[in-house]
Length: 395
Image 1 (tube, rainbow, N blue to C red):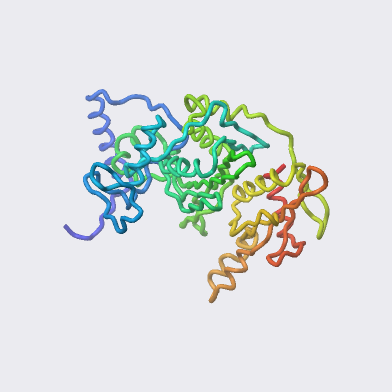
Image 2 (cartoon, rainbow, N blue to C red; image 1 turned 30 degrees about the vertical axis):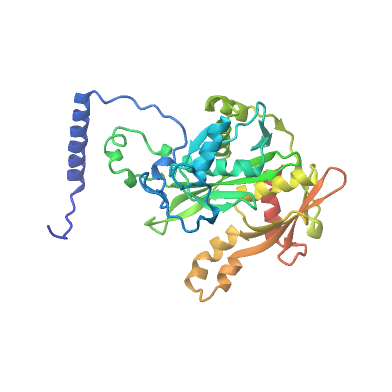
């Protein structure tokens, strides 16, 4: 064997490829395995899910570092939280769902009529008659079973976010993909990646609103001769958000199957538009014809969908602390600022900090305005652009 590389001329390459495909097709035909491929679900992230590094083989037991907090087990003196939950659920008759490591996850059945879909424009969310504390472990397991790892897991803030993943269902399902592609699956790519953020909001009656927002990236050709590629944002997909809401409804037991859940999501009553831009200069804002509680939650979802980085939020003051990168500045100065940057100042100029203020207005209305990082009214063109982006999501 040598390290020298030989290139096959294009015609020869095609001939060799044709022989390989022909041989594979002939062998499959002899076995009667060729059939038409019928597309299934439009989402499939499981094939690229990373294996957990914390899985323990079934014949081993986790070492106990401190047994002051262990739960007593009458059989062998070794207790685990998953085993305790499994025993408790078995005693209560509740269903038991296991994670990838074999541990049990509490699944609390939702009472009849305990889940409903609400919709404003193309925004949909679930209202579940369970507390965020009960739903949180179920949602984590839901995303893990959907093929994702979590990049953000903050139960105190009510936010979890998946890592970027590829929807393998978008790959072409032809004879090559379904034979040779199964062996060399990693060589196929859609050129798109997705991530999902789940936001939980507690309601006064103890119920929970669940919002799922999608963000997408796509690989585009760049350079004079299109010789390189770069990942750029693509618009969020309300259809993907609706699909995962339907899958979650099925997981929570609110639908007998996914088809019924999809019908519930698709037929959710569309409420009238609720937002419009008002004022100019320092008074430029979005007027939302909803009370503060509803406006606050919808602004949070709008920030997620547009792609803002929410660093913190103060509900008592009605303020979201966000970072925003103006795409026009990146397109204009991005290449040269990266080429001639010697410190962090250029990076800080790209990602500016703002405050999104939500204030109760007259009667049942609310006002959403943009402030500087110091809390003063922002009258710059970028602030107007941010208001326009949020208004598109809120109206």
